[in-house]
Image (cartoon, rainbow over all chains, first blue to last red; front, side, top):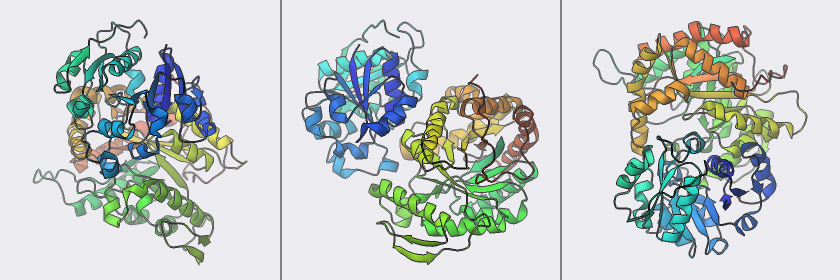
Amino acid sequence: MTRVAVLGVGKVGTAIARAALAAGHEVTVAGSGDPEPVRFITEIMAPGVAVAAAYDAVEGSEIVVLSIPLPKLASLDPEMLAGRVVVDAMNHWEPTDGALPAIFDGHATTSEAVAAHLAGARVVKALNHIGYHEMEADAREFDAADRRGLAAVSDDAAAARVVAEFVSSLGFDTLAAGGLAHSAALEPGSELFAGSFPVADVARLLGDAGAQIHAPAPTATR
Amino acid sequence: MQLGVYSFGNQATDPATGGLVSTAQAQRDLLEAIVLADQVGLEFFGIGEHHTEEMPASAASVILGAAASQTKRIRLASAVTVLSTDDPVRIFQQFATLDALSNGRAEITAGRGSSVESYPLFGYRLEDYDRLYAEKLELLLKVNEQATVTWSGSVRAALDEQLVVPRPDRGSLPIWLGTGGSPNSTVRAGQLQLPVSYGIIGGDPVRFKALADLYRRAWAAGPETTRHPLISVGNPGFIGETDREARDTFWPTWYRGMADIGRRRGFAPPIREHFDIEAEGGALFVGEPEQIANRIIRLHHAMGHSRQFLQMDFLGLPQRDLLRSIELLGTKVKPLVDAELGPEPEVVPNPLDGGPAPAQTGAAS
């Protein structure tokens, strides 16, 4: 059981919160402001999750999932997330978001831009390359033959392992890999982003995304 | 259950040349499709504002205006109007005019739109996305409510007791909120007590049951009203004589359409295996009439929606295939759905009608 904070209550945030709760984790969800409107949503979209203000949700959590629109990145307080294991589940949708020069500020990948803004946070790129509606539909038992593979990429090997284990618990074979600079392999436009693959193919498609950190963590949950 | 079709405009394949028809011909093809949809008894046709060569339906109210004079019963709507980059006063005037010419059959679906070509086209900044939508929705609802409008905001010139005409015979127009399924937009539609229209493009649509519940709950938390929460669903679909025929006809056009969007948005082209899975039990209602009828009925039992419409004409679909699919929807699917859920009245109800609450049917099967 892991204490998970999910920041953002859109399609992705509510789907991750439900999946995490189903996997037996303790989940607290937060929106951008007052918890009340968020509770209104989660009572139906993710019944059973706790709701709090962002600072309270993050406080005491072991993993923080970011599922807000990327253009809102600047609204996140870096101090709040300093030292935390942070899952960047966001994507840059250039056709709808625009180029976001202020956010990218010279960085090539979304997660590098996130890591630059959240100085001191242990940023891991994960859960961005699975459709929100697939989060529950594609989850499988540990030894299922058709278990889908996902990736957790970070400059922080220990953080990548923590997140890989978390994602595995949701029902996926998860590969921890090194190197945020290579996380373009998970972004929109990549083969990995567009498709659904067993974990062996994920390893192959990650290619340059640095060395694999360890084999998928065996897990009894789900 | 109201059944219908929606389109973003389509450059059909020209059987004579094998190439794509002109963007001008695409407008005439669309009009032909609306007229047929009315003739075969469908209740709804929606046009989604797009500004690309492949999807050239940029002026929905003009096409719908032409359709108004050639149709009798079908309701004519935008699906969606990209509200953020248009002027709410102008949108209202155009659809109020359409409403007058069609004897009360016009509707607006206001949304953010899934594409953003209209931002540079009309000189808006993507950074203002949220503010543009919020302010313009507020103004559109205000203009819809009263003929003389006083409004001020940051996205357009203020109005000081300005008259906005024509006024619809009913006093106002049905305005739906269109969304791809965001919980926030769902709550907003419920709180504003507006009908909500979901565009569903992937996964089993039955999962939208939770959003439907959220919408009704947000509505119920608001003031007493004689109106009732209304839900419509639009998704890709295509009807053929057999499942096999429907899928084989639709696949190339779906592939081209998605590959084209993918090129611009960073998706890889679709693969046939995933398409068949989605056509089997996902968001793509592609198959023979009985299968599609059953899926519409199943979705109704989950969400309690009262209108279902399908987008059939992705890039290059020959016009004759579109017309055949519309005909099958009206002549084969509709009787099956009506037999299960009851027939629609001869005069299709205006969403503004109070009427009885839509029956809340059983749990999802």
